[in-house]
Length: 317
Length: 267
Image (cartoon, rainbow over all chains, first blue to last red; front, side, top):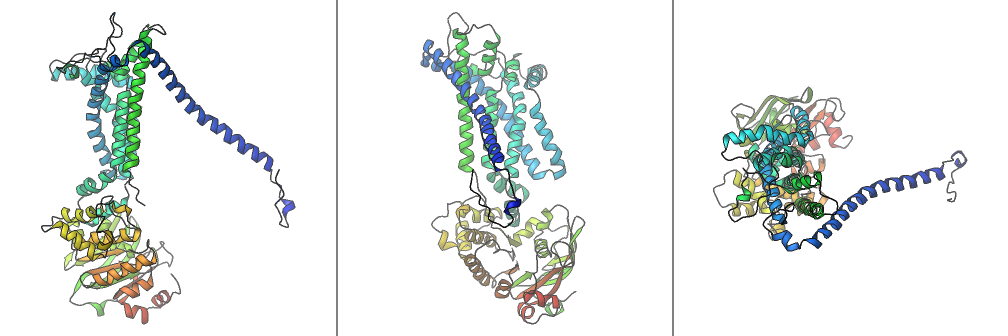
């Protein structure tokens, strides 16, 4: 294939199998490239099916109704499709989850990276990440069977299915994500910055608060946004513990009462897809419209987090 | 090994007596006796791994932050035992400032880098004024006065290091420790920092670790030469070979090892 470039005196002793290695190089390139493409193609396919079915849906239901109607009753005789009902419930449960996950996760992350002895950290962090491996169905039943009765004993008016219990347990479910990613960000702040702070006569608390945390800010915020994206997309916990009760949007804000049963976007999709909605019926198409909305929200959150990390990341070199 | 007799005088700020430092079971520095005089530059020279930086880090108890580090012997700072239980390392580091090998400005604005230590240490005067004064003292003011709000990480390496010096000077320390402050810098930045050190030595006590013997001879009045017992870097315990005025160490060393080192025969 190529000309013989070997000019040294011992050239006759060297006979590399160039042909074969060229082929194997090309094979590896094509094979691995195909696998990389496959994952992109799958994603594109999912998005395409979402978009096509959602377009079908919007042929039957005007976009303005979808956005501005105050009720969500797609399975009724006289259906209404106000997505805000589901979005508000989704954001409420996610907000409750973040109220649990951000403070606890951040404190755990700070403890792990700044205070825990290396030996302790070595087994504490993996066990925290193990918490992420608990199936969400277990979390869901934990909320329904354990947390809800406690809430009912403490707070009057808590229904059997309620947003509060689901949100609190969802917070525990996303806690490892927030804690682990924040810990990575805090741990990545160069040791030289901590030393620089201590050398100026700062206490440990001051060094953490004023130098280490600001240095890790982009990573911490990204971890919180990622936690929120997970909470928005979380399905089993809200389906089991928060019920299936879409609350109409009313000026008295009763739809934001966390003691009551609500329906999130994800639990609506579960409700319809496990039921007997015939393919191509309007109920069937509804889940694609909801799925599309959910996808757009989580995509936006991911983009925000991506932008934030790039905008505020410090390069210390 | 105690060669300091001739140097003991009234204006000693730091006095080291029989100091040994361990990292876990590894003996890094052994039996050092040394007196650091006030308001002059003392240079620590010697090959890598002979305990110069370790000793420097004992002076502001930075070693407290290193896991497994143990200090034996005594260091007195103006008569106070540095390692006495009632000494608060936070308070001590406020008196004994430090500049590191690699510039380590905080990821904040240039202004905030200086203002932060000023505020945190409860300065009662005009913060803005002291920021400007510190930047002037570090010969950086003219270069940054129009961009004080910019991130400090946007400065060049030499500017960053002068910012770190300004930051250390801002809290008006008694002693300034410098751990190879020019090793990451180009020759022009190095020259600027050396000029700066020469100016500062009239007001501050400066202890500088350097690998550059010319630098030591240019800027210091006192020089301490360290070596490690096995002769190989990092393998054996570091110890003080000879300590004297810079002139004496470089022109009339009493130890053969010192002569070999300063004449460039090894290291």
